Amino acid sequence: MSLSILERPRVQEARDRAGQPIVEVRDLNVRFNGSRRTIHAVRGIDLTIHPGEVVAIVGESGSGKSVTARTLAGLTGEGSQIDAAEFTIGGHNALEFKERQWRAIRGRRIGLVLQDALVSLDPLRRIEQEVAEPLTTHGLVKRRDVRARVNSLLGEVGMDDPEVRGKQYPNELSGGLRQRALIASAIAANPQLIIADEPTTALDVTVQAQVIELLKARRDAGTALLIISHDLAVVSSIADRILVMNNGEIVEQGSTEQVLGHPQNAYTKMLIAAVPSRDANPLNEWAGKRPEGA
Ligand code: ADP
Ligand code: MG
Image (cartoon, rainbow, N blue to C red; front, side, top):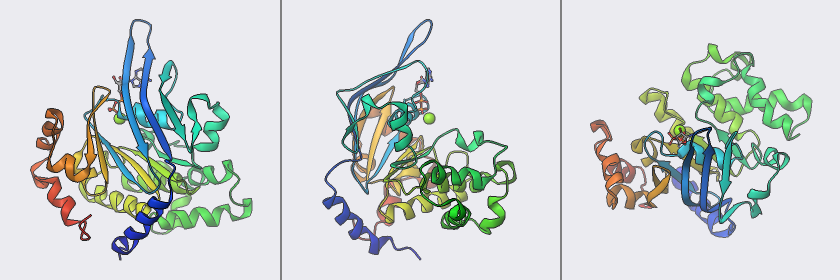
């Protein structure tokens, strides 16, 4: 049974109470210094995420979505150079964070489902080890309680038979179950924000819908989400707000209704036109799933 209609007002109240954004970024630039040239991957973007909000970043491949996602988690990578007029996490200046501080934030305050994790899960690590890591890293449960907590998390993300699944290795699981395991790991430490980069991309349509349902359950539980996708149809049923990214810049942003129903930018219009005909009008789907008319 979906609780979303009952839960939404409660989430809205939580939003109204919680004044401070989880993440606030103004004029963020990310550059990679190569031997021959510098790639300016993220160009002056602004982004604020409040508690309980669902924000989506959409754009074609290479537009800077993943670099943005990684930067928000302190994982921009080797050779990168970051500057911003403001970059705060929970009110703290992230531009001054040392690795130790990022480690304290990753998993704990911000849960991550990274784009390549689905294919690059450590093949030698059982699923239960993957999911236990945030719990042990942040010392959140007693050693003897870890297994029970992991099994309960695997159950929460809809895995049948968590005890058996936990003992398996990534290559024994379907793509959909691997994605569930990654989400279990991302939610293990009960973060305020989950960043999910292309969480449905490698999955077939049915499993895509299941993963979106799973993310909606997190939203209904009050967790903020930043969902990144090249596919507008995927985010249309879940996002409160959409940011459209092209060539490192945010070219358009607004409520899901505004961006899908009244796109202003030519690039946004092109993305909407590119949505396959089975979801001919993502806005119809979006409107149909919000009975409260939000
Ligand atoms: P998207 O996720 O929107 O497909 P990305 O954020 O992965 O795009 O990449 C944006 C741009 O940044 C691309 O031109 C990509 O080649 C470049 N880029 C990403 N990561 C690195 C890196 N570690 N070193 C150099 N260039 C990078
Ligand atoms: Mg990407």
